[in-house]
Image (cartoon, rainbow, N blue to C red):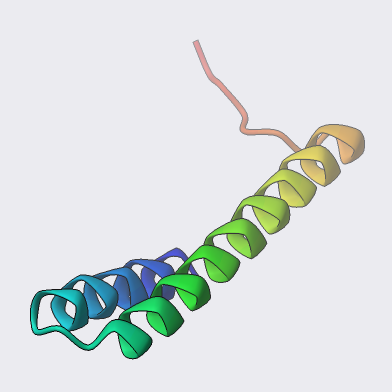
Length: 60
């Protein structure tokens, strides 16, 4: 999902360079939404892993 956010961000930058303001704004807003969804899912996954106790096993 982070890859999609980066893709839309790059599309927004390219559209802004060529002067397509509406497309750039739309792509930037999609990238922002996807980024925040990614952050929320990452945090939920992190909290779920900590609660279940299935963290990474470190061998010494």
